[in-house]
Amino acid sequence: MPIYKAPVEDTLFLLYDVLNFQRFGNLSGFADGTPELTAQILSEGGKLCEEVLAPLNQTGDAKGCARHEDGSVSTPPGFNAAHAAFAAGGWIGLAAPEEYGGQGLPYTLAMAMNEFASSANMAFAMYPGLTQGALAALLRHGSEEQKKLYAPNMAEGRWSGTMNLTEPQCGTDLGLLTTKARPREDGSYSITGQKIFISAGEHDLTENIIHLVLARIEGAPAGVKGISLFIVPKFLVGGDGALGARNGVSCGSIEEKMGIHGNATCVMNYDGAQGFLVGEANRGLNAMFVMMNEARLGVAVQGLALSEVAYQNAALYAKERLQGRALTGPKNPDGPADPIIVHPDVRRMLLEIKAFNEAARGLALAAALDSDIAHRSEDASARQTAEDRLGLLTPVLKGVFTDMGFENAVKAQQIFGGSGYIRETGMEQFVRDARIAMIYEGANGIQALDLVGRKLPRDGGRAIMAFFKETAELLAPLAADEATKPYAAPVQSALDDLQKATMWLMQNAMTKPDNAGAASYDYMHLLGRVALGAMWTRIAQAALETKAREPEQSARMDAKLLTARFYMERMLPETRLRLARITSGADTMMSFAEEMF
Image 1 (tube, one colour):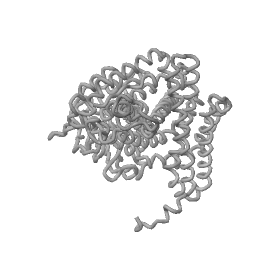
Image 2 (cartoon, rainbow, N blue to C red):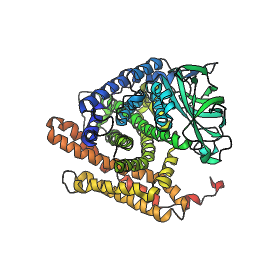
Image 3 (cartoon, rainbow, N blue to C red):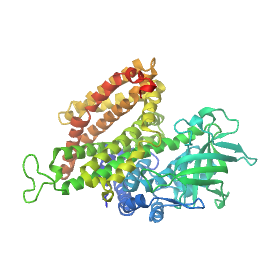
Image 4 (cartoon, rainbow, N blue to C red):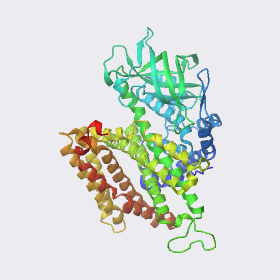
């Protein structure tokens, strides 16, 4: 059975030594977030993930979910008790306001906990994760009556939540949506249509499921401008919060999937189900984007999470598996062979995963901190800066983290050799589970188009210009210091590549949109490499300071400094390749006639 150890110590280092989490005590929910309390929260959450969720991961994959004749769905053995423990610990409502049943703590801590849970058992973590996203959308756009009626039970984990967007003919292009909403005399609506690929659409973990459903009110404009958002509960809820009759929503089937078998991915049928409008009519995407953006960050973390658990198991295996001799002579002379970790190519794969994981964790926590600032700060300028950075980097994190998360799961499987292909070791499950993250919540090609087509030009390029300025200001003093120059100088070179790519797009994409489309995927990864590199410079700086301040931490900090150097030498130079691809333009790929494919 695979092992998992929550990276609590590394998360605390990133929060307090790299991101200066302690400086944000003025934000709502941060005042009581002392390092000691944060350590206690993350340690307890990590323990739950290690001891309760991780042991259910392989059995959940093997057993999967079962749909019964009455349309009900059973989750794998142990999931029910695990969800009860997860809810009882307050983990679902960790960042929700106290007035609505939550604990009011920073979203940043919830993000860290989501990583731990997804590493331990990704399929399970999707149930509370979707509830958190639905809760965020309701708290932002729901009426006060709706918030009071639904939010407390969702925050406490008694009820769960989903998002219902996709239809058989309608995936990314939501303008093709056909689910109908017909007004009723009481002000509610009758929802009729079919949704597919609905994660956690039906299950036995909670007493009610609150579906957030996109639908088109009769007579609404065509396209995305005519879409509204509705609350459609599995069981109708009385004004006093008591559960009433079963609503006209049911699970038609469960999808047979490549991975995440422990999560019920459902075809949902709405047959005149009673729904309640959220926010304004025909502005449903504005409300749903709250959940979608939070979900995209959550999926980015899934990429990191699978990369982390795969790495932990591959590193352990590489230290124990005896095979061959080191190129420089035996390192285990008393044994029949050396452990495979002596071989450079095994180290290459392990270090590529490790170098991604540590910087990606820092970027994920930084993004969560920006979300906290954007929603909790009283400083309008700070909110705007955080929103700009979050808007720019969300598609990058989703696309790059999940691409690399899958690649890293495959590398970890490769380290196991033939054993990695066998179900018993668990590595093939990590590969299968990681693959979905590249597809759902907007396939990664769509994330790249969103970045280049919408996020770069928004507000006259304000966000990307700010990114250039912030990164340059970070690097300048570090490049002037001999101790940090080896980390800052390569990032400056990569930043130059990014600026050249951005300028090329400005000059070549407006008049020829195919150039933007052809460049978008490479541009997303180029920006991602630079962002990860900038995070590594911050980590290296903090490691040097920690080493000087706490000599007993020298070995741990030296490992970080070596990992940072590996990233600069072996991974960051990819930016030059990406730049070459971007500036090659779209002419060749678009010259192919359809019949040539």
